[in-house]
Length: 220
Image 1: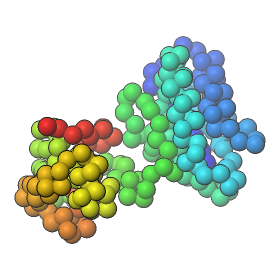
Image 2 (image 1 turned 90 degrees about the vertical axis):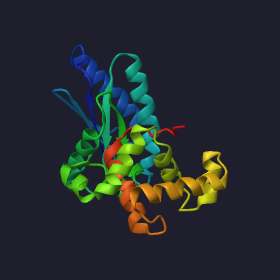
Image 3 (image 1 turned 180 degrees about the vertical axis):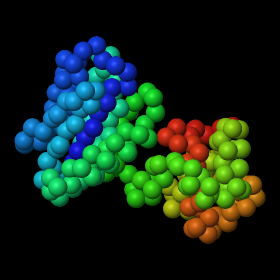
């Protein structure tokens, strides 16, 4: 697994970058210390996992990032998927840079092992992907987000509940009839059938492409 970190804003000196690299290496842990390279304004770590689940490293890396932020060293950190051999290092580096590119100007951490394949496919919001989303679905998401995102928030909860309106309502702390009413409004406004998996996926893709990495909160 490969980790790439870059400062959100220039650090005072090279020592600060090397100190940040040491902190990340400690957070990454492992029986063998991660191979760590500092070059210009970039930190690259190669971590051997053996049988460890790569997702377990997300929390310690995020904790280290927050601690560094408190000292004035704000970083953006991208983590690749797991490759079997060192021959995969170039591809792992490319993956980590892709993760970095999706982070905003305030930095943060994105670990690809924590994503689903669907999440990854919608990670890169390019113009072609936007054009492939139907105008009706795109309009629905844009209009709803500009109005507070109530229906978008409901759709995301519906998806997380495996298209079960009752479970979605419980998670949203609303009556199931309210959930059904909102889902009907989504179908009406978007022209999509929420019983059709392809239509649901198109709406979810539209949400991810338009909302990006921003957290969507429920409106009134």
